[in-house]
Structures are given as C-alpha cells and as structure tokens.
Length: 315
Picture 1 (cartoon, rainbow, N blue to C red):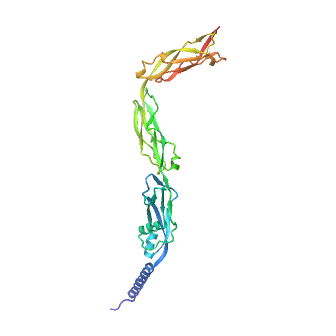
Picture 2: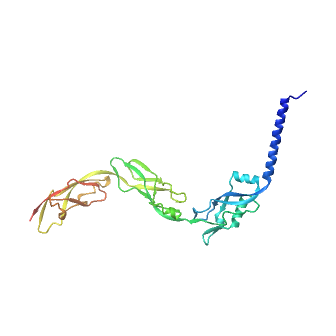
Picture 3: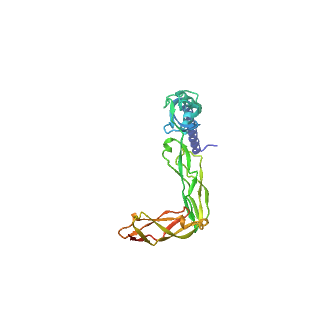
C-alpha cells in the first residue's frame, strides 16, 4: 500500500525537528559541561552575635568572588543568589572587642557554604573587620496616655501615676540618645467611682534594635466621692501702720469648696486662713484684695464669694 505524499512530508518535518532538538541538547550538554571561570555574588548574613553586642550599620551585605565550575553550577547560582552565613562569635576577640575575618577565613566560609571544592579567587573584600556596637542602657520616663471621666460627685484626689514610672531600655547609644520617653497605649475609663489600678501595655519602642524587659505598667489614682461645703472665715489684716485703725467691710468671707465625704465633718474654719495685705491695697478705688494663704489639702475648688474688701481708716 503506497504512503500518501502529504503524510510522508509530515514525517520528514517531524524527523527534522527531532534531530534538531537532539543537536541542541548535545550542544547544551557539551557547552554547560565545560569548566569556565565566572564571578559570583553572595549575600552575607551575620548570626550568633556576642552577648551585649549589636550589629552596626557599616557591615557588608554581599561579597563577590571568582570560581571555576561548569555551566550547570553557574546557572544555579544565577537563578538563586547564594547566601553565606557568618557566625560572628566564632571570630570575636573578647580582648579587643572586635570580630576579624581574614581572607582565608572568608574563602573557607564561602567554599563550605556553596559546596565548592575548588579555589576561591579575587574576593571583593580581602578580610573584614565587623562593625559591632556595644549595648548600652538608660532609663526613660513613662508617659500615661489616658482619657478618664468620673461619675457625678466623684473626683480624682491625685494624679494618675504609672508604676514603674520609668523603664530601662538597652541598645546602641545613637538610638538611645534619640528617645526621651515612652508612652502607654491609651487607657479609656468612663464614669469612674472608685480608685484606679489598671495594667496597661507600653507602646512599641521606635527601633527594633532597642530592647526593654518592661512591657507594661500599672497606673493608679485615688478617686473619692466629694460633697460641697460652705464656711464663713474671718479676715486677717497684715502690714497695717501702727498708729492706724482700719475697719474692713465685710469682716468675714464665705467660701465654698468640695471635700471627700469622709473628711466633710472634720474640716473646720480654723483650717483656713485668709489675709488682706494693707501694702497691696488698691489706692485708686480704695479696696483690699483677700488672699487665701492656707487650706487643708483635702479641700478642692476653693472659691471666695467676696473678691473686694472695702475699708475705712481711723487715725
């Protein structure tokens, strides 16, 4: 049975491409199996730093070198850049506080980590002195970030205080110098009617190279229920000339203030002192200004209901 001319032509074309493919494969095998010299670039990674040391900014991130190998290996290196890991503690000298790698050290590390048994040539760095920074520490104050509202009739007695009020931060000196405080994450409390004692986390330090063991603080504040109280107080005159008799109008002043409920009954008029200084009188309008010079610390929001004191002089 005769083979159609069209089918015979297709077989010839397929055979042509088959042998062409074989030729390309043999050429590639021959080409890539030959050994040649080429420049390789490897990334550098530094591990296992000595205690109390951090890596500085001036260290090399990569290194180049020449090797002799076949094309298949070069193809692998080009597709994925090799990485060479440097164990810093292995080369750290505790006497001079430096890590030194000679040219031979670098060659040994490269050869071992890229699985190369030949000669490493033409290193871009003929030895390295690693840039290490000693860790220092300093204390920085804690700033409380809080939004607090109090229930009607309740008020704070003291300021909101963190414990501890400062933390120790360790890291490179240049980074430590750039921070002066650390802030807590926001604390929001509403309608507070009792003492505050809340644990709150600190914000993250601004640089990854900085470290602190303290991650949170406890913020405290005394909160009490207050009531308003009124008292009528005598006015004390000072710096009145010896031969001058002064009559003031009025002679007593009413004050209002708020005080914790448990202290309401114990705070009396004798706990306060209001003074008018004759030397500080207003000579144009002829009046004295009352000044509160002492009061118990529990009394808050003190207000004198009379602001001016008239006076008459008798000589």
